View 1: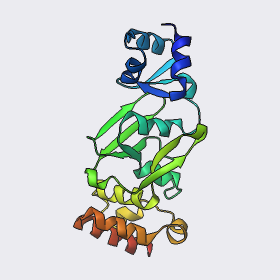
View 2 (view 1 turned 30 degrees about the horizontal axis):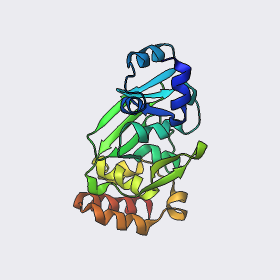
View 3 (view 1 turned 30 degrees about the vertical axis):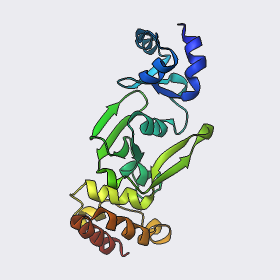
View 4 (view 1 turned 180 degrees about the horizontal axis):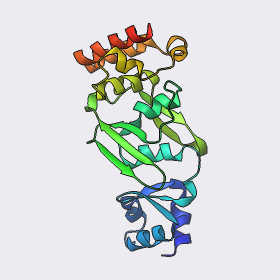
Amino acid sequence: MIFLEFKEKMFDLACFNIHQVHALHPDFDRNNLTRWTKKKYLVRLRQGYFAFSEYKNKPDYSLYFANRIYRPSYISLHTALSFYGMIPEAVVQITSVTSLKTASFSNEIGEYSYKNVKENLMFGYGLKPMADNRTIQFATPEKALLDLLYLYPFYDNEQELAELRLDEDYLHDDFNKNLLIEYCARFRSKALDHRVRLLFNTYGL
């Protein structure tokens, strides 16, 4: 198969896995993918997952790929908090939460980190629209912060919480404290309850 023929059929997917390729082309020679990756026609996202190089520099696609290459997952933690302007740092690594095992992948498009939670904690996220009528699964600000406090147990004192440097204007004007309390109850974690109380004390919520 020539690349142009393959691209015409697969390009709208943006990224794809080997199973999708074989579903369309049962006799496809997967050595083509290795050859096309070496020629920079494709980017290898992780084992068995590829994207067309044209999507490499398109806005939001690095986040879109995070959802696609390890599922189920949603953008959360530092990446979501930075997106909402709640923390001052620009975040290099794209951080997600998943019910699969903890994992990380590095490729030409970005560094991807996935933290594991139990399946019943996969809530508090929705679909954010992006370019090309696609969507990205993204935590709410409240869930992103709870995921952080839950998965990083060293946030157990006011000094550590203060060093997060959460934007106080955002917390007092845009943050939904009642939603955070409602979400927190679903974790059924005394340790998380304690960290949330410390958070409220630290930032005067």
